[in-house]
Image (cartoon, rainbow, N blue to C red; front, side, top):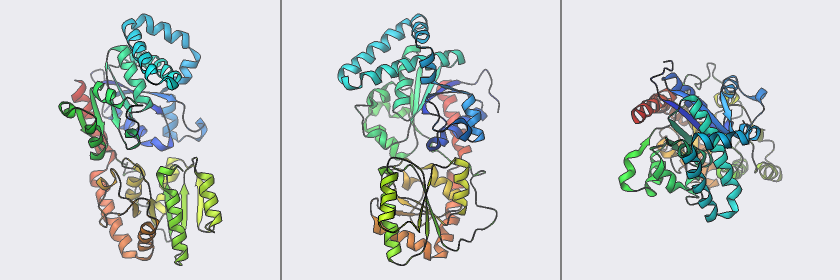
Length: 410
């Protein structure tokens, strides 16, 4: 469905776009455009990779995205004067609120002033687009800028809450103010919704909407040719940070090796924990079994998931991971942790295995079960494919989201 003049015009405000860890935003933007929504994206930061390393879809998105810091650096005086004369009331009102916030936390004064300046760039893009609504993903940096830009322009904003990290700094991120100020809030899970309910008045719960994210099951699907790995391949994809739990995975790998279980573990991702994880692997003689593959593009991840025998995600904190949906759609049995929104994705021992977070022995037991039991892998694979195709399709998610935008903005 092509965009038309009668469709709502929305400006998306995100912290970084395109980005490997947020590929779902690209799928969402393209999906609601296909439903007739007129969308432009303002990204606070430039992409996480050079242009030539972006996928084809990401390069197209790059060419149609306004990079806020980049634009502000080039034309700061222009945006100050433009905003002052176009929105004088919004200019001074948002400045006053920003200065009050600085008094509460003087250490972050420079950051808060930067958000205010960035909001002027977003306001200009929204005005040129004819947008009467701003939408942010995550309730953090991008949402702060969207809220200020909406205040400058005198229009509404909304945002999508993922969690759980967003709920760790409620005061610092002004979450209660954002929850109260937003026209509506989209939650990606019941868990996320419950956390927003915790900080909002009962009378405002009707502006909370659940819209599960999804996976493109036409792109992520089982390989046409069945793979037969002589040595079982375990795959883990995620940033190398404490919250993703790769340290527990390496502990579990050591347990499996001590039990005489043979496997290859592919760890995809990069991050601040990389050196420590590699050091642990070398110290405990895991290097023959563990391969750190670094940062990998989204289209390459699909191929790795199709070739893997087991997908493992031992996280301590997640929303509902898209990467789990992708593995399920590729027919790869999953082992993950029973935390936050993950139990909403699948049921233990029906379409995946759930273990307690931080428990290396339980994780090793679950991995050994799947490595050694072909029938269990096949059973979980069949059920997971049915689940993801029935409940977690990105096209259904985008249709629901477009319908919600049209209803709330009409």
